[in-house]
Structures are given as structure tokens and as C-alpha cells.
Image (tube, rainbow, N blue to C red):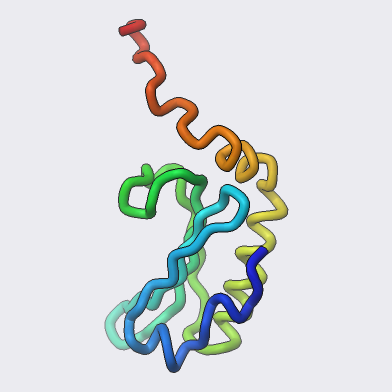
Length: 110
């Protein structure tokens, strides 16, 4: 998994509402600031390659929120590492066969 430093730091990146978008061995991920009223949180999301967040079906994404701050960013990094290890075969399959199913036939065979 990419290093913890690759998530940058809260003050110089997430305070500016920037979104980190990256990938590792078939697993794409995003870390961003989300707000519910006055409360800010960090949200980490993972999904399989090949598509970007916006073009990936919601049911293929998994997300988790963390406290806003460096400790929350550390927890998000650990969660990303855990998700990679837990579903390593899924990510590797997405890496090795990125367009599988994209051009598959519909239920009626057409």
C-alpha cells in the first residue's frame, strides 16, 4: 500500500477541500473532507479499477468516515491498508482484467 505520507496532511490539503484520488494494485481510493453542518470528517472510499469515482457504480464502493485531524487520517490510512489486504484478490483481478464485464451481454443475450 502507498505510504501514509501519500495521504498528505490535514492542514495543507484537506483544509482546502482538496480530494486525494489514488490507486494501488487495482484498488482505487479517495480521501476527502465531508461536512455535516459544522462537523467536519474525513471520508475514505475504495473501489476496483478501472474507472474514476464518478463513473463507478455506488454498489462497488465502500466508504468509512473518520475524525477530522491527523489521528483520523492515520486511522483512514490503516483502514485503506486493511481493505487492500482483506480483498486483495478482488483488487488484483480488477488490475489484471480491468474491462471484464464492460462489454458483457445483457440477460436476453443481446
